[in-house]
Length: 69
Image 1: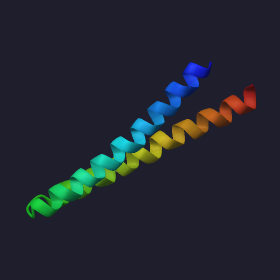
Image 2: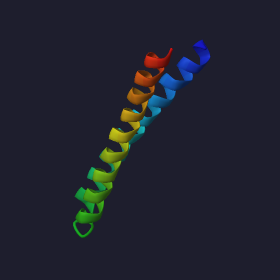
Image 3: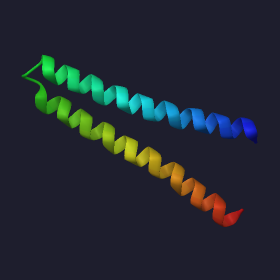
Image 4: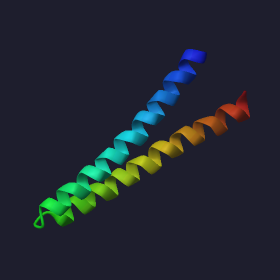
């Protein structure tokens, strides 16, 4: 069970770092390309939406497991 907990923690960390890098990448591309600002704003919004959903899933999992176990 300890290995599964470590894998879950690593996966959550990977999601957080990946979302951060994606937002930073979109900001850099927005600064470089004035024509595609709307596209990168939408990508940033989608990335933040994904991050919120991903974090919520882990919290809901913890609540459900805490309730039933």
